[in-house]
Length: 479
Image (cartoon, rainbow, N blue to C red):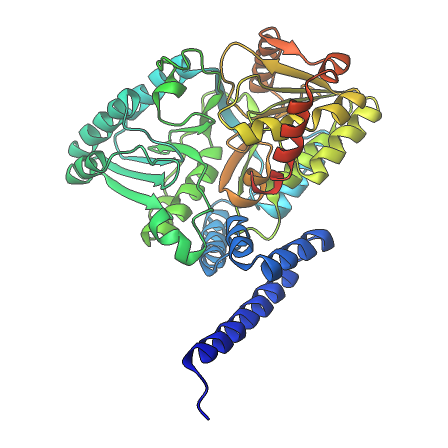
């Protein structure tokens, strides 16, 4: 008796479904997640297979490309360390700063750079004239890596400069993120390429669904010019960041200009990302080029790159170590506050042991889920004595942490799960000096433009707001 074709297909479907569930569940077990997270993912895969698998992909599972990237980075890092080995008779850091240095050195393998000139740029009015001026002065190369690059007035101004410099013979390379730069028009990319600018897209969205990489985004903002100057911070290429957008005329952000040996570490990040995406190895070509030393040093720093290819959640652990090292004060500014369990616990313990903890986030948000998920943490934080302020003047986008007014972090990483687990990020850790003083002064200035959240008032918010917070918090691992 022949088995009907429909029955055969049903049996095949059940077999394939069972095999997929077993394979995916086994891979989840090997990921060394918490037991609660592991059981949750297995439950979703087993009982809601299509939706569960989609969220499994979206949570940022590491693909073979990530492992390949890690190997490339280790090789490139070895090249730079061989070129200029770091050797200290003693670290010129305070004991609590050494704790931060040690975890960065252990995880990210980036050295302490003691000779640097770092200038803090507090908004687009300060940053973009400097960026454009230095781009126009380039004589050898311009290397740029950006999450968001828009085809608006600001983008057109930058594109024009890049095209002109390429036509002058300067080597210009641009790496942009596929998701963040979705408003970068194809005709602008074509114009740049025709003029000699080398342009590459970081992990294209079109192929990301097949390779499980569509949720790995390059959130970095780096410019390296002639090994003489580097820019890094929170500002992308767009009118809102420059402060000329009608919707955001007073966009608040922080960027930095860096001179000194730390340029090598930022350049390494670009070169390895370029190697990964463009399959062009440039490390040897640029590792022998000297970095111009600043006339005067005003801080010590470490560059902290992180990404889903790392074995450890570097940025999460660096932030946690910074909070744990605090003796007097913790000042945090972030546009999105969705802390990991580790950071959430560290902040509460710091407040309970007498450290003054202050959190500054924007009153308005560009993400409904992120806004309410962040607010869901307010009650417990306020109960522990943590000060919370809402920045009112416009949207605040910078990512700052200042410890005891002596150590500071500034860069691209938000205080959320996406920055800790899914994005390629880069921060700089500043140890003492004028830049830390400037960041501290700017932070107090921002508080004057903010409204403090009081526990008794916040507790009286509407039940609808409480429901939105509880609902949004369910999605915290995905934000």
